[in-house]
Structures are given as structure tokens and as C-alpha cells.
Image 1 (tube, rainbow, N blue to C red):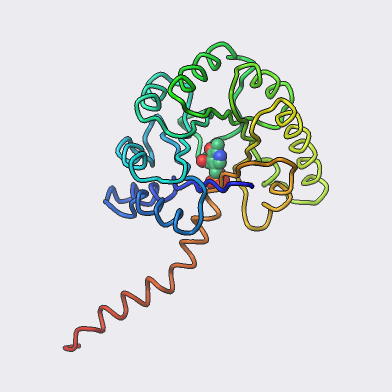
Image 2 (cartoon, rainbow, N blue to C red):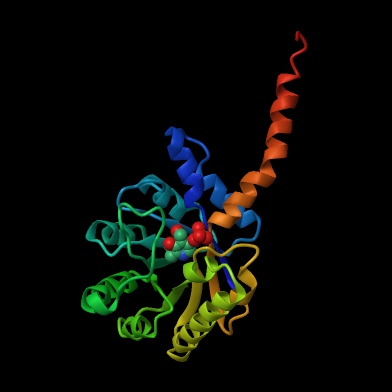
Length: 242
Ligand code: PXP
């Protein structure tokens, strides 16, 4: 059965906008699990712009489904992963100036160093996934690193604006997916997936996991507004003197 990993980075982004205690991603993770999430995904970026070391340590204690740590291939974060032991680590490229992860990992250019990181994480019993564009050369190189899973970057698919382009991207993703499954690896996908574009991706044969953040947090945020306003209004009207 296909698993849904809910990415809660945006909850931490809102917290960091005020450097306050809320909204706490730990609480968001528990709420996502209550809604049926099969896993919680967070990206501990080198610049700590949203998720913090404290969040990762606490999530390790509190997530009872599966904790998936997105991480760059850098020593500091690899050490944290080896110490924290998430259930899964997803290796992603990272650039300080980017708004979100742009493009997949370049494995062909750094196969040996990625292979070493994959082994170090697997030695700690962490399932390792590589985040890749649907590019067969990259996937071939990734398979040689000994990783357990490959997450296909669906960002290009998600940003298409007409049926022809969407079908072209879908074909690339399906072909990449077949190569991954034929190699005996778990097939994951994510980035830009939303309520209006997720089904064709979920229908890809042997899809095992989808990681979705932005669209779920946006919907939660908007759907929650009426209730939040109602609660505040009831509270301020509960004092009888005005
Ligand atoms: N998968 C990976 C590897 C990502 O880097 C991200 C974004 O943090 C996601 C999935 C989720 O993307 P989105 O927020 O667009 O759903």
C-alpha cells in the first residue's frame, strides 16, 4: 500500500517568522499522524531556516509512524543523522539561496562520496532514499550507491500548465519508476504534489511512498481559519463587561 509522508517544514517556517514557540512542528506531527499520515518528513537544512536540531531530536522521541529526515550530503548533518537514527534518510541537494529543494541530487558527479554516506547511514539501520530527477543516467548511478529507495522529484511535472507537457513529464516519471522498481528498490515521489495533480503519480505501478508538504499545510491552514476565528471570538465575548 502506498504510504503518505507529511512534510511539516512549513509549520516550522511559520514559527520561525516570529521566533516563538508556536506553531510547534512536534504538535503538527502528532496531528498529522492522528489524520492517518504514514510518516513524518522534515528537512534539517544547514542554515536551520525552519526545522531545528531540537525538532529532530524531539520528533525522534515522539513520531510513532516513520521519521524521514531529508538531508544534504554534508558531514555535520550526516553526523546528526547517525546520532538521531531516523527511520529513513532522504539525501537531497541543498543550496542556501534556494526557496525549496530545486532539482534532484547529482549522483553521477559524486557517486563515491554518496556511496560512503549511504553505507554510514545503513550501518545505523537507517533506510536510505536518494532524491533524483526522473533522469535515467542519475538513477543508474544511484542504484550503484546501494541505496534502498529513490524518490523521484515531481517538481517539473507539478509545474506543467498544459496536458501535453504534463503527459511528457508523466512518461519520464513512469520510465524512471520502472527502472527503480526493476532494480529492486522502493519507489518514492514528491515535490509539488497537490490535490489536483497527485492521482496520476499515485497510480504509477509499485509506487510505495509520496512525500507531500506545501499543499497539505496550505489546506490545513485555510480550513482551520473559521474555527480559529470562532474560538477567539467566543473567548473575547465571554467577558461580560463590554
Ligand atoms: N520530497 C522532498 C525530497 C522535498 O525536498 C520536499 C520539499 O521539502 C518534498 C518532498 C515536499 O514538497 P512539497 O512541499 O512541494 O509538497
